[in-house]
Length: 313
Image (cartoon, rainbow, N blue to C red):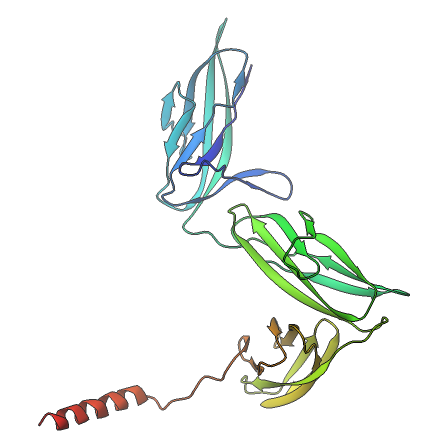
């Protein structure tokens, strides 16, 4: 009886390379093009002595390596998905027996970080409020999420780990900061921050008024919704430019979520920074791009050359 098993390790670090799908399926990846790998079949089991290992490393149906050693070194020169098969052959009293196993190996040209997303809902009760937090919409564009870390009070330390859903109970008014960090199987990470204004409980709420500008560059009147700190909602129609006053936390960061033209974008701002939000093909915040006459740089260069020639006459 034979039980064939193999794993893939990074040659330099010895780290096992794998991903696990939500249904528990193991995929070997992500592997970088040119990355030196160790294919290790030494954990294969048999009550009989292992005679030979055979490897189809490029998935073409042909054995690339054969021999008594349970490890082989290999690298890929092109991205793609390769179905790698290992066969283990053992000596038995009656001759030989064998088992084989196949795993897909994902080879990529570069690694992409995951994307952290928080969906949330605030429920007020008699003397407290519960902020329900859901990170299950987070994703990895080239693989799967490995783990989650929740900082529920903005102190930089994880309060909850490994779970994609959690909650925060509060009993007084204030601004509450939540950070979700997600990690993928390539050891890359990404974080997102949400700020919640709680204003229906006991306790004072320190607020100030801030003016923000909305600049519509679409060429037609556009409906814009702005949500500040996941609490206050401002609905407006912007033809070209419009300034509005919003309530903010003067002592820390504030979250502004902007919805317009079928798109959504979140920004973190403080009390002192000027805020201009531009609505175009994308939603972005910053200074308006300076407009210059076409060929303006060429005219400046020409003038500089003429002055240089005049001075050297």
